[in-house]
Image (cartoon, rainbow, N blue to C red):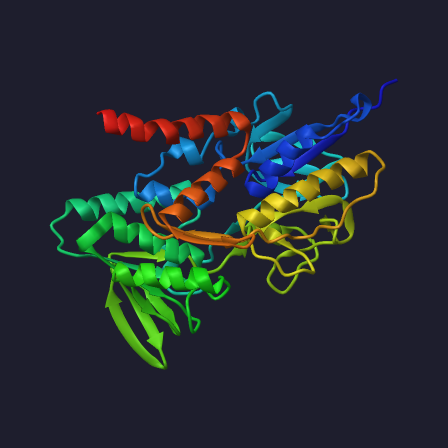
Length: 392
């Protein structure tokens, strides 16, 4: 009698989850041990979030950065289920889904991603807009459209958080709004981009200065209103006007994790063994924003993609009786978009800014897009679009 085929369940289709699934489909499974790979996500599309900013300026289209899972997984052998995950039976590895039958797995990968916390400041949940999903972007686009069509002389935007996301957002919006834009970045620390390379930080500060973007450092937000926010600087409170408040500060693990008794660190992230297995649950792995390793590493797409490679290998190894590998993060550098046709990057001994950095960043992300068929479609569009515009 043939043994029942193994099943690997991957919970979440972000960078960690999708790239784990794609890598698993490429590994040398023997016919007898070929598992069923099931990717589960509540959305029908993957989001290549590092290029989300380009939607605001019209540099890219939605299909380029948010392709459907069904297209990306075609001919890979990976099955996609669009469903809300409602719970997990940890001992049996049974995944409970909303309006669908439960799924029992031999191995699980928890890749549920993070959210932007808005519940620490009064009014933030009601009036601030995070910038993490397509829905956030559409909401921001609609507010911008209404304001741009109005007779307002100035459009005032406050961006909470002076990290990579806040700086990239500010530059893109400044270029979109031009003379009408009045932007400011609010950062609690002494300086913006605290973890960035010095070359990138200085390039970013120059880009912000050229666009007249105001910096409020050592400043915290006390309250957010419908068209204002209250700031606290050196024990002094001040209320400023803002038609849009964007919140990019902080990352919180998916609320679904609260119901799982996984061991967690003081930041609420899942504690992992070096092999990316969850402590105490060797058949369950975790990757991405929700995972905490002994090595302190940034919560970025670069990290999640690297973890996906190790996670896929270790899943394969655990089912094929091979040794598992400890995860080692390899920093390949950092990149930032600083407006239209402008960027900065450092890594592998290279430092670039301006249009050359912008083009290099595009090529790197084109290479990192999932699935060869999508890479080819996007690459062809990037090459042909300038030619079409020139001829027309």
